[in-house]
Length: 189
Image 1: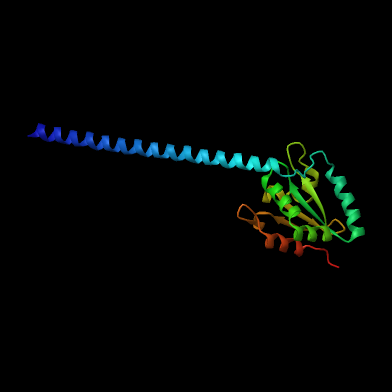
Image 2 (image 1 turned 45 degrees about the horizontal axis):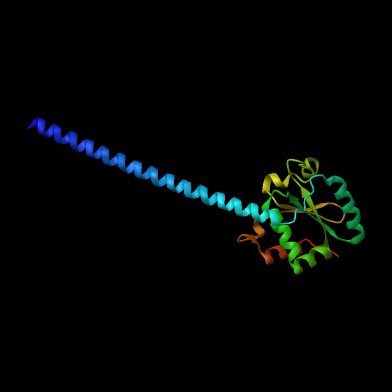
């Protein structure tokens, strides 16, 4: 009787262990399949973003002397009574390129920008990080990512730094959000 009980308990233990092992193996297989599916989806998204990026204009110039360019813009802004809108980012940044394309291809936004701002694309890339210029504005890209907008008045005084994520809508930018942002920083007459 004792032997039968021990044999029964051992058999039950082995069956339980075998079932747990099977469940863990199934769980691992499911997790592995999910990882593969996720990796595939991420690769597809990266491929799609790279294709989109290749079709968009590249407004950032890594070879530009941003300090000198901004000084010239300040002199011009004083004469034209315009503020300066600096879009900081790089040609590597899909959201930077999307924003540029969004503004350039929307007549209403383009009209607001052309009338009220001198627009500058401040490059940040491995080729040229423009560290002096970014330091002057407290390195906003480090805090908010890219693109980030630096708004200067006609004298070159910093009047606002704007994160871009609050301007996003879906996989792009919201017209009313961007329009409100620009209109908020037009020069005071």
